[in-house]
Length: 195
Image 1 (cartoon, helix red, strand yellow):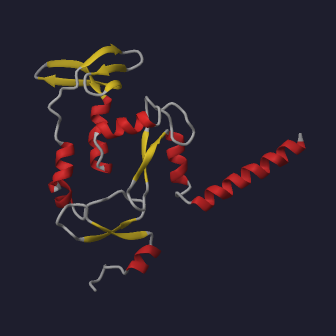
Image 2: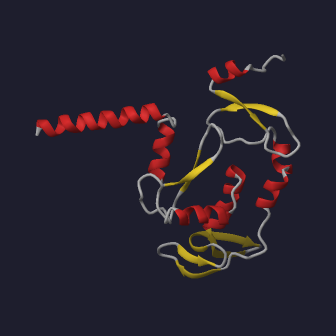
Image 3: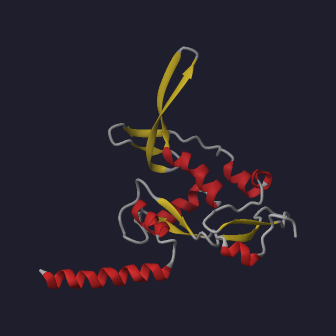
């Protein structure tokens, strides 16, 4: 064993785990922190993976915006449908041009890179959840987060910012969450008795 290599028990003790590279025909195992969403053993494997390259290729369809509402920063995209927009400024020589950009198209690259998902899959997940957070039910059509298991990398659903942060702060530990529920239940009963 080379210096720096960890056994599985040592890696788990240090908050690390061993994963198999997701690139076809690579077969290498690599050590990574358990909360990481890293799926490839190296940048070379990541950028040469045919599945990821296909997801990251720009679509042939242009994201044309209509019904732009600058006050609410919303529009209808020809590819993504109703979406939030972001101001885009470009300079060509001495000319400064300002326009709007489809926020969903920008986020699509992140979804592909981090989770291996395309826009259609994410929008289908959002539709199955009726545009609401999988935990609290709050409307997340404007801003949502893709929740994934930090151990397996499997995507679980779409959450609002608060619920996604809460899961992360609890370390996805079910026992800690149960203890928090018990604490809230008990302190609520005590607070009710005091009044």
